[in-house]
Image (cartoon, rainbow, N blue to C red):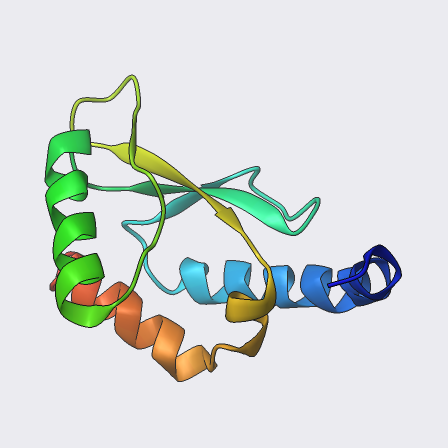
Length: 110
């Protein structure tokens, strides 16, 4: 996408980021940094060790075709973090599909 087109899309991407934050709030076991949206990027903190999240990431990628980021270690052994860029895919993803993804990922660990 040409630079001018992407620049023109930034407002919509930021609005979508705010919507995603509201959806994430529905899942108490998830957290985000920063705590309030500042740009169309966020760090999603998940209630899994990095190793467990890497296993889940591999399963989602191979079985469902969903790549949700590169899990990183946090200071807490039972948490990990991924960086999310809110771009075209998340801009166009239906809210219910995103909720479904979180429900599947958390497997009742809301």
